[in-house]
Image 1: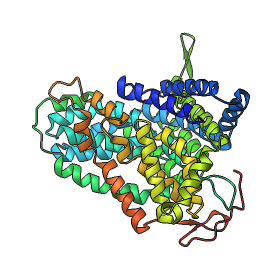
Image 2: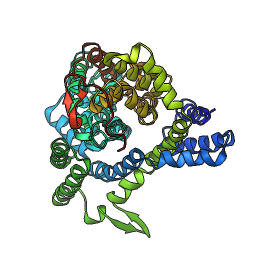
Image 3: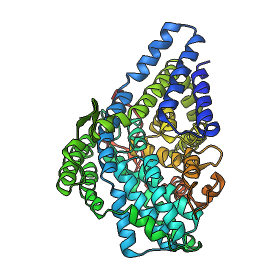
Length: 472
């Protein structure tokens, strides 16, 4: 009966993403809260049910994710309003790429923009109107061009220190030999080899197969309308921010550096006015700081709702029983088996959540934490296995994927560029397909596998598992 809130929540996922074709975090959060209201009716003890909800919402992991999301939302919005993508459009016009080269250029560009903004869906809404019609007119294959845009957005989600999926995958994995959870800088650094390997293979595929379309003379006009070379200067604070995250492994320091330097550069180049930072228009607050926080409200509401559901499952003993059942079996009794269990588990969870990997990892993260820790896997490794499988094949199943639903929507309405179905997009989204293959190989061969050593250090060999620290 503890799964009643989960079932109701899944109903709303299917309703919005499959039936209504609407991707909205606030609507999904509403589904989560309605699920709690419905679940409470069936609880043996109504009061204890809501106590469990509050315990889940008030957990250190939930609170840390909420705070980080609000902070990174401001930086993400700064990058969006300064039009980094316009700089890449100008560069494409300058170089004169077409066909497969344009598809490759679009893939790399969207990878960088998504890393800078930390928003895969937001990047897709920005990139498709610019690159899709122009690329088709320049001789790019529509399927692989659209697939490259989706792939680049997913790569950014996979690698950006400020993306919600990176934050969630890190924050749900606890150290056992020191206080705290996996730091974002360390997770992203250790994840890079898998993501970059998959991106490199995908890039070759996009270049080879992306140039089978027919050219048209109207592409230059489309590119010129969206061109702005000044946008490229914002890559400077973004690069420094990412470097700070890797070096200090402190997301708050990195975001502070990114916001301060970003404001200085944007003001100096005229990309924003002082009123673009904070202001008021007709009594309504404006500026990227305000819109950055407000833009995260839906995601934060989703986090709160999901952690409330997790609190119910935890206090009902469901998570403990699930982990015990998995670890008692032969599959999860070894490091390789535990990683495979995490991969399969988060894949199934992501499918159930309609490809919404953030919600899937919020739900499955505590399970992955327990399964992996019981065989000594380092929190970085647990976070990476979970994140890469969630952002792989599971995120682009045609009948369930929010990414493909949105991608199909964004290919319609252009003269000279065909509208594509989710089935067509599946074949062109190379990065998540290759990423899944890379992670299967990494699990099978042990590539990058590390165990938690003394004081949380990474070790190549497993040490006896004994939790010396149980709280974070």
